[in-house]
Length: 323
Image 1 (cartoon, rainbow, N blue to C red):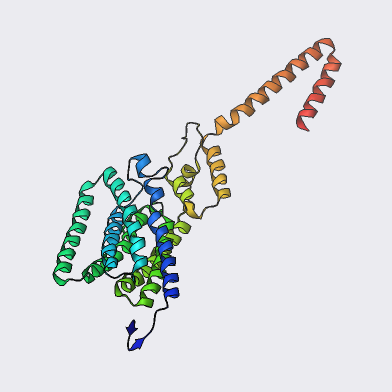
Image 2: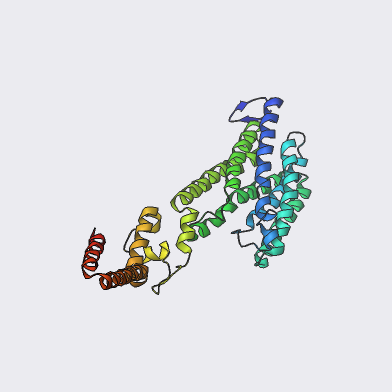
C-alpha cells in the first residue's frame, strides 16, 4: 500500500486502470503526433530534408525515455503494466522517426553525439542495475530522460523568437504533452511512484509554458502577415504594379501587423498615382484626343454643306461636351 507523510491508502484497481489507460491513449497521441512531420505529405521523408524541424533532440530523448521505461516497468509488473505497454509502442514509433531524421539530417554530428550520449547512459544504468540487482536506477534514468523529452520542444524557442513564427513548433505535440503529463502525474501520485510523479509535474509546467508561447506568437505574428512581409516587391517605379509590402515600406505608417487591409489598399493606390501618373493617364488622354478628332471632323463636314447648320451643330457638340 502506498503511503506519504504518514498517510496510507489502498489503490483501487478500477481507478488505477482508468487513469492508467487514459494516460496511455493520451501519450499515444503524443508519440504518434510526429508521423505527419516525418512520414506525412510534406514531411522529412517526402522532402528528403529536415529543414522544417528546428531540432531532432526530441526524437532521441523520446526513444531513450521509452527504452528506460520499458526496462523499469518490466521489473515491477503488474503494477506498472500501463507504462510498459505505452513505452513499448512509443519506443517502436520513436525509433522509426529517429532513423528517418538521422538519415536526412544535414548535421549528422549532432545526431551522433545525442545517440552516443543516450547509449552511454543506458550502459551505465545497466551496469549499476546488475550490481545492485535492482531496476530502480532505470526508473531514475527514465525520469531524467522524461524531463528532457518534455523540455526538448523548448529547443525551438530561439528559432521561434528570431523568426516570429510557430511553424517549427507544432501545436498537437504541445497539447498532448500537457494532457499526457497531467494524466501520468495523477497516475503516479495515486500509486505513489516517484519516477512517474517528478517528471510529469515538470511536464505540466513545460506544457503550459510552451502553449503560452505558441498562443502569443500565433496571435501576435500570424503566418499570412509574416509571408506578406517577407515577399519581395512585385513592381518598381518604371510602371509595374506595386505590392502592399513595397507601398508600406515607402510610406511612414505603422508596422504591417497593425495596418488594416483597407489601409494597405489606399496606400497602394496613392503610391501608384504618385509613381506612374503618365502611364495611368495615358488611356484617358488617348480617348479624349480620339473623341475631339471625331468631333472636329464632323464640324468640318457639316460646315462644308451649310455654314449655318455647321455652326448650330458645333454649338450642340460643345454643349454636350460640357454637360
